[in-house]
Length: 487
Image 1 (cartoon, helix red, strand yellow):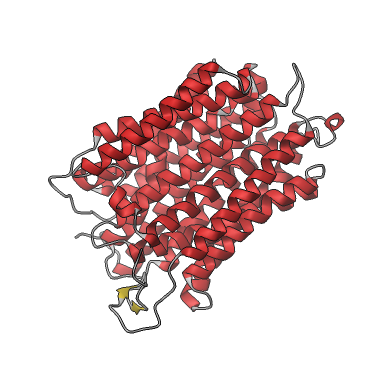
Image 2: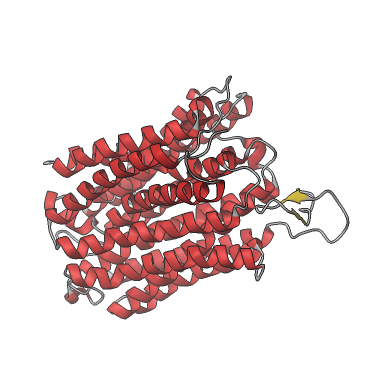
């Protein structure tokens, strides 16, 4: 396997890590950075808050489907090549979003940008395959920290470009330029990776996954627009439930399933997936609702009537602490100060605290900033821990699959979190008004309860066995204590 020409292995790895971190930062900018701009998008195109939320939830929904597709194509054609294609598609979609004159065009561009969800599992696979037998704990923390950096760049650009349509147009233009720069950089520094012949894309499974997710999200939208008695929403919800049963049946019979139910049944993997699903819900929900709270007028009792500068004060702590948490995660694991399991439990508990802070302190800049800071810190700490644990417990040859499934579930949780929050707020919003304060409290209390379930899932992750047994390789390549037999 080739490495970067003209560089020794250590420098080649650092150069590749820099390029991959930049790609993960771009992914974050397109997720959390754009989420900050939903109020501006809503005002610029004159759409409802529920419709505007599809800019985020639709993006995440496409990401759920794109992640396994990109993973399979990476197996077939090589992860390096697939990363280049993803960056090229993101660049073109960013140009379309920059020039969009209607909400429909902007939404389509955002849906296409959803392919960026494949960047993180591609990055993990490139590090593992391009530099075998090298420590992964530190690089995983760097990639996790890159999410904070990318989002932070987006927040700063929001403050720099001001309010209105100019803010999101310039943000998309920046994303397009960054994608082109990373594409050129990757061609120079990323190592070649192997191709696996015989890999197939599970088309029936992916179609069912996309149909089920779309039905459930559309049902939530209809409930928000028409009330809890909506017949259309009930039909969509029933179709989604039936589709879920069909999806499980199809995936169990597929030789190369997009969602491998056999892996999902293993205790270490289902606990990690449950944590990612529930924390993803809270992460994206907080990222969308915090700027909405800041944008609301003071007459609501919770709004700040924020301008661009106030939005930066509210949202930038989320990105700073995400960067700090990602770097801290790598240091904690390399120093041996805390196990990856303990780090996962701690960060999930922080996720549970953040919506409580929003519920109690939503009417002040300091309160919103503290809530976003806790969300960012939890995001940074959790990313590196989950990536390491997935690598540790994945059966041989399935790391890319398990990381991809975990990313799908995190994005799926995020899309449902955004849409559920939007539905609850829409039901409690009078005509031409803003949601009642109690609706926000309901959303945040519900998020805290779900994250408490996430803490329980993290605690259910197996502890290292105390009795002798087969040892499993850690992310650093050294032997570690075995994981207790799964149930």
